[in-house]
Image (tube, rainbow, N blue to C red):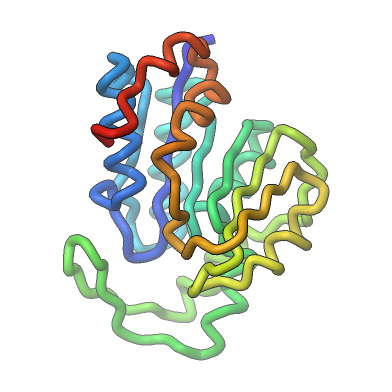
Length: 202
């Protein structure tokens, strides 16, 4: 099986986010750029899921790497397709977090403005899955100082998976670059090859 990764960014993020670009640079160093996909996701969950399903078909059986809302999407896809996933400070049932806060949103990278509607919230609710009992197949990387999401919600929801909690950090997950070789190994890249990554260049 060819090693491949599908990176799934979060709400109002993009392929230009720091983690995404670090992953792009690492893949390029190893000549694996063609085996990495980071779609610029549509703001509506149904459109975003269609993009992700298409990417999975293209990549075969990729390792899913989902950040924040991307972790919610990755959980649904991992359960639907039996895929492996690494979830980074994932949102747990995000449709319950908006609490009526609808209206104009702005993408932090593209500056695109869009309207968060009840339709978005319902589409997110439609993707809800039961707490996964996936063991090592789904790994969850949490940092306790996440300023956006309470890490304890994910710690409890994913207790049937491999959960790692690191003290401090933030929502973006500090130290992500140092863990990219680990991600690539999980995706099927040989450990000796992963050791060639120049982390200082990421």
